[in-house]
Image (cartoon, rainbow, N blue to C red):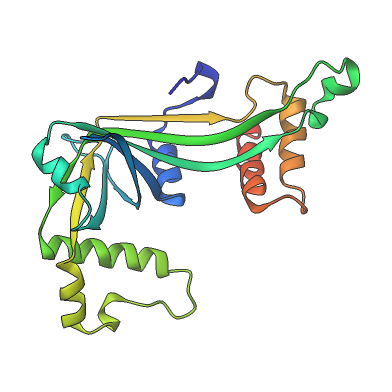
Length: 217
């Protein structure tokens, strides 16, 4: 990923924060047919000596050939892409539009790319713990959260047998926060205000809030 220095984000807590807030990652790997991508909800675990940037964990259907590829070539590195807030930027928000008209549109966004070897974990105890953690996290916003234990144990056991766990100890984690850092402070404030306007889509408002936090640092 091309990342100019002004757009580079290297703070591990910030990178993990985006993954946590936007957990659906696109896992890209090479198989017999070429590059392919699987879209999976991940959790991110804390760094360890083996995984200095943390470890991504998820599960796939047993019928998914992804885990077979990982088992066949455990040294193969994969890429997982996490897309954060993103939105179109109109040049109407730039002060320079009124001064000279020498402005053009752009697109701002925040993304994280994670790299590492893909491992498979075919262990029902590990899988149950993962599914329970993911469920607890994503059900937290519900008025009456559903829990794995709400379903019959035999039913859950049957479903666990139909999935395989994967984990990626991250050897590299790259963040790109393209938030108008190459523009003036006035332009960035105007962009953030435009994006957070009440009539803008939720994604644009989220980007505006992120830009506001960066402007105020």
